[in-house]
Image (cartoon, rainbow over all chains, first blue to last red; front, side, top):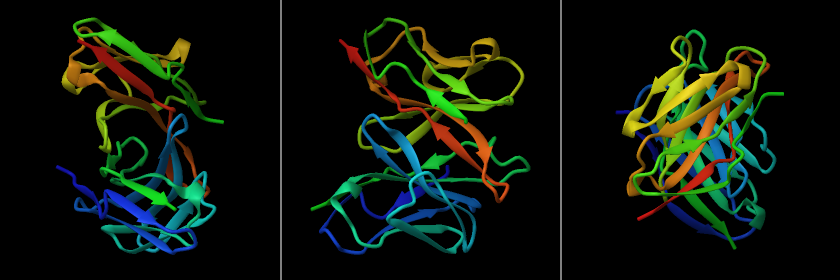
Length: 116
Length: 117
């Protein structure tokens, strides 16, 4: 089975801190994604990576950056955490096929981040 | 623009009753459609997917979904709900290319299912 592992289930940080959320997948998937999930808003894409060192902005990239130095690891960085970034963060991965988007995503269990 | 609508935010059913969760999409071509389930404190798990062919697709845990192009719908059904089905359900479409030629998924806002004993 595909395993997507997020380093923390719960995280509490303070306003202004630099925050790192880590995600590792073990199935050699090319694509990795970071979403935030808020009640009533569903999943919103923050960033997406389709290869090492390659990234694409999603729908809500402001206040975030990402890093993908190795194929299996995709990090989300909150440069200066703010209270409105308190949320559930979900990482996902999927393989690259000829048409790409016919492959389902595999999700981690999420990190619930609180910014105080 | 591509979009996915789940019109029901909350649904409550009795255990043993049938279930239908609605999903409508907006997309210019034939979409790739997915249903995911999220149990409390967990990530999303794939229930089923539709790519082409038979419009009635079977998934895990006894769920099925029917693709209706004329109605732009992909509704999820289960004939008899179990208490363990209480969760949040998300419909998603795989579509919309980025300028790099890659793709993303568009999710609905979810339907939270409550099951009464």
